[in-house]
Image (cartoon, rainbow, N blue to C red; front, side, top):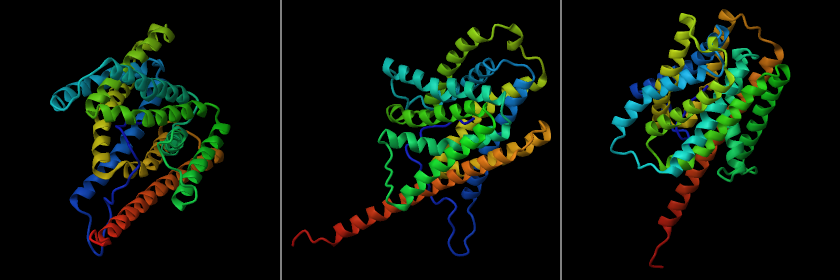
Length: 342
């Protein structure tokens, strides 16, 4: 399960590009280490959530604890670090925060946790790599993303989207519970697209994340109070459950958000997304060792298709950016060659 700031476009900066015999700079090494750590944090959430559910905590109660801890961690930093830059609030903005929380937290997390009841964590992590493809498809449908099917980068994005969705379909046919994980990806992609205009009006990212976390907590609390009538589902019965709750709140909803903001700022959202499959590999290894998960051919094939589609979409986005830059430079050169006195 991912938490993310605004991603206006999937662009990639040449953070790891090297020329000649140059070695990686310390900044590039730090960025690479940070992105890998970020994916391991998200991989840990898959494992922590599975452990908490297996130990008996309510699937609607778990996100309540996660988000109240995440909000408690984010709120002080947001208040003090963005005190001078935070825009004023309005009822319209608060309502938009509330709607975004329903997509980015409430429906998203509930679908994921229900899916974990029926799906091995490895396949849940694999399906989450659908995010960039679904985000592209939704943005294109809303006119926020240009397709350019006649160009190779446009064709790559379309083929990557189709391939990823095909891979998810293969896994879903194998495990019906994957439909919930797919719902998790759809709502996450919707959140990624819908938050863009809101963040432009309210660019204080930590405060924005804190508000989303707060409204998500309230929504999850209402759902849990209605659905989880057994008081035992609200109790923390073991150290494993407590650790899983603290991990999801402090690490995933707190530290991982700050880390992802930093990674996207330094390397771009595309560079950050490229390392998504690291999460799949890490979860697969731990799941086999701890949960004795069985990897089946259909699930493996579907996972490979999703990852392949992910890289097609990301490659298409990279080529599109290069093409746009070349076109812009060409227009500038042409403008410089025109003599205004002629």
